[in-house]
Image (cartoon, rainbow, N blue to C red; front, side, top):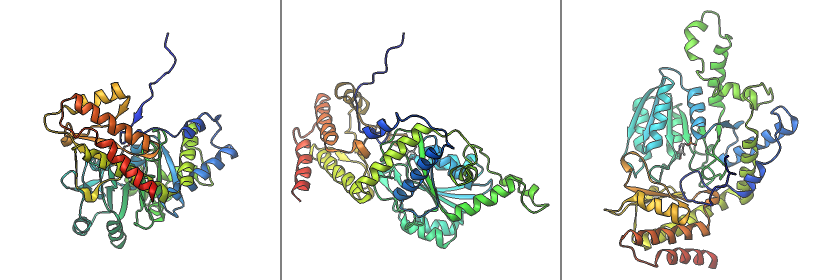
Length: 410
Ligand SMILES: *Cc1c(COP(=O)(O)O)cnc(C)c1O
């Protein structure tokens, strides 16, 4: 009655989900093992080691949360945030608002500031606010996929450490595409994504956290188990981590040597993530970041050569997402529809105040390659001409080819 699954072949140029590495898809066909099988726990340990490597950290704790990236964000925030905690969140796009929403749901008293979309914060502005607000936690997005901007984090991380504030970073969009230096930037907990620059399907979120976070989690766990000093437990009941599924203290016992049962591991996703991480490390982090930067350059040159305008402050551009201002009078959704229907190619629009104002082209992971960049430029030019837009015809692909030829000549 229902036909065989037969999806059309797409060129995925959105900021996620992106095209999955063929090796990852093959790894997902590996037979299932139980999560206490020594063969499988060895695979879990290897996955942890590779997550550490991509986050550039020595943290003991680095493992995936089962669920999409926001499950990783939720696990970190619900395990750290206690009702009444002051959490400071500087917002510069849609995903900053997501941090606010999740922190508030777990009882945080959120203080936020927001800057104009298409820009990021001067680190000094954020640091001054942290000194004023005196929060327990600062949560920030590293790469805002909604606007195509990237926030420099090092100075903010250093200030947080000095002021003994926990620094939580959403690195979902950046992990594996551009540097995310957890230890050097003094990030206490970071969340990555699979379906962005790691080129693994959606459904898992690699996270890492350091001993400062671990200490807090262990304190909260003692209370949960009634192991606090007599008389103190009752007042402290409210400190219990409110989620079972996302309780990082329980997940530490599941991923650590105790191997206490928690959930049934998402076996096929671990296979996928392990293979995706292996590919990243085989390519080399620096080489991978350089590849993303090269294709970003070719894409930007092509876009501007056809006469389109890039959106956002170029000084804080996110290297893996290119936002383009939709020319006045043009129906951006009609352009996207034609790209999909006639070229089997998907690019993204945006949210909230940017809805209908910009297109976003992702150049992430396996999608980030010459064939795709040239295809998206050629297709976009053709579709724009069909829509009667004024473009410099024939320039875009040539400009990108110039970038590639110059890189080859080096
Ligand atoms: C994609 C994305 C998320 C959400 O990821 P899901 O996998 O859809 O839950 C969160 N933060 C940022 C910066 C993202 O780009």
